[in-house]
Image 1 (cartoon, helix red, strand yellow):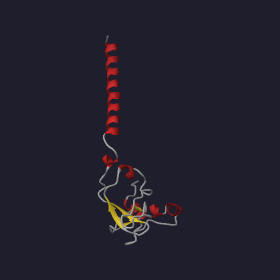
Image 2 (cartoon, rainbow, N blue to C red):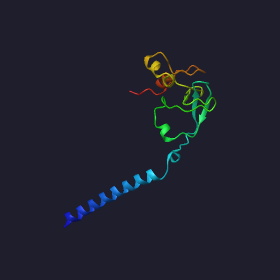
Image 3 (spheres, rainbow, N blue to C red):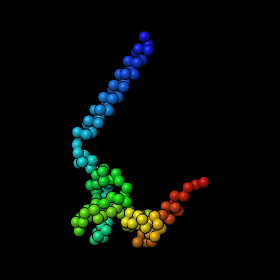
Length: 137
């Protein structure tokens, strides 16, 4: 008798889990579109590759953020160029924002012809991280 009760309990739990998964999937598909996934990025910095305009964008979507920052491109609000602006990073030493060489020209960075250096203070980003986050052996 106990074996039948255990099987019934297991089957009931499986039915609840399956129905819950179906319900949650249906809700997430029907409960909203792209607007539902708007994210406040608290000011992600960008720089236009054409007009060099620097700006902050707060209304990025999850789909835009779910890519490698090196391939993330947005439209420039100043010159209206489509997909010309790429993310900027903050210098760890002086706080200035600049575009990484690995974002602007990934092939040159991999080949060693470009470095991620702050144009304001000259801090090499890779070296800064090596100095401040060395593994303790």
